[in-house]
Length: 96
Length: 266
Image (tube, rainbow over all chains, first blue to last red; front, top):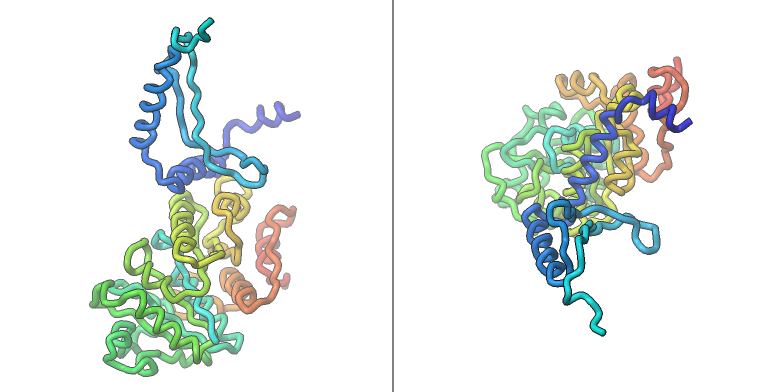
């Protein structure tokens, strides 16, 4: 049923697009975070993680988004990082 | 002791001045004493929307600088008992007024009037700071557009930072036909995003343009659907519990609108 509904509903209505765009822009507005700031955070994280792991910098994704708070009652901003690992560096192995 | 309500929005052109004029007139029609203050120094418009532009002698800055007594600057609206306007100067700078002076002015007016309604200028600079300085309560006006909702969110943050708690939302120029076909954010969508309480929904209504042309607030026009919406908000301000309307029933558009805004079918 749901799929059928999706099939007939060709694309998101313009108000859904508006709402999604607004939600994203407000996360930035509310947290006062500029793209430059995010770039700084990103490069620092890469630098630290590279000491221990080989990571795929090209597909690395880091963004401000939102998530449910621990009590599940509020939506709170969250920094979400998706960092693909290619391999471990020797420094990261447990020494025997 | 009266109450000071500031009407603000961040973005320009969403209907702050029209809202101020209609709510002020609506409250006066309920038998209360009301002063409207235009704080948009250099770009005043509340006088023309109210149809009182020919009666200005003194203005807000004259009062603050002591060039005249407060009573001399208040324009009495002869059509509505208990309604007064304190206009903004047209040829002065925003910096002619400081927030602490607005606080003093509001305290003075609260002794004698039931409601003081402040029309805030667009923006978040000095004029905004002056307008909110003496306010007990704030209404944030927005329209169902991304730019207006975004600016409303910013204003809500600034109001809270200035300790004006629990601002309430007025969604202006709603078009139920567009909401129904998914091309306009609904009231629920906007409240979901802004997360503040709702005090009014005003439908898009060409009578607003007509009444502004004439300088007669639509709240006094029994045939205007926006006027009915303003009458509902007026009653909510005075503490009455006026229900909000459900847009999702199967009536025709006109019947739905009439039901929505409380106009009984003929």
